[in-house]
Length: 336
Image (cartoon, rainbow, N blue to C red; front, top):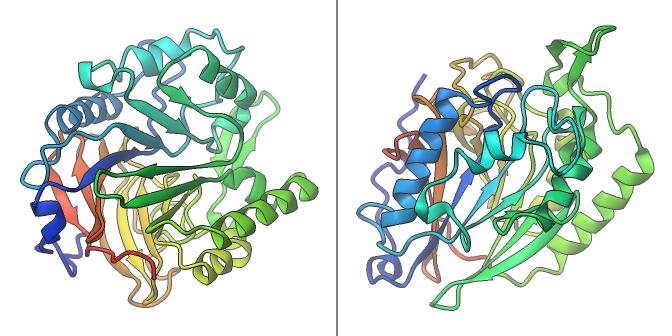
């Protein structure tokens, strides 16, 4: 299904055209395989496409290369990271795959955890930040701010949606995954105190932000038309906080597709979950608000997104794994 929406032809802002913009990349659900060769064709394609953008900038937009990426969880399929921070999976699934010259330090990957990660040792992923110059995962949820050459600011709020909404895997007696729950079926947080603490932190963080653009990223989507669908828990507890504080965009993976939704307000929803594989499902097209879906594609051998930022606006482009732009969202004005 392809909805050719609003703005594949959206004009780049004059600031970006003048070369004052800066950019960053986003990928989700990229975590290879727990069996040799510990990766997938989609992940390899995504790594090559990201290297191309990191080397040359976004074609036709800016020659300034991005200096970091967000990684939206499911970093290690299928049972998370087994072992400690010295596990060979870090080399086999990350270091040896995203190994392009322009993806090396000081290029940084800002990481959060997905549902598959929570089946393993998330603490080891956090600890790996001390061993790698380009893997940044300081704690389960965190924030950081980046400033561009024109003074434009983006505050990133990285959250743990599994702690908020619960795990999605149904396991058999041997710990094997029988199926994954849809977003409407998630059981809620395993630890209600930890979930409440994170929600309080999110509310305080987004309410106090003075950044030109405010981006919240989690693994589970709030809205999605794809295989797993919307996450009811997040619609109830997280969405109102984002809307109240004029968050620019919510970014998610989990569903292995590329999609853009907007329900008529300031908040954009981008699904960026096709780095591992691509799923054509639109099983939940009727489960999102009417007319909120602006664009969807199953992807072609991987996929990621680029964000071009200036004082004039923030523009999101979805890329196939080879780096080709397949959709450009409407440029989002700075927060008032």
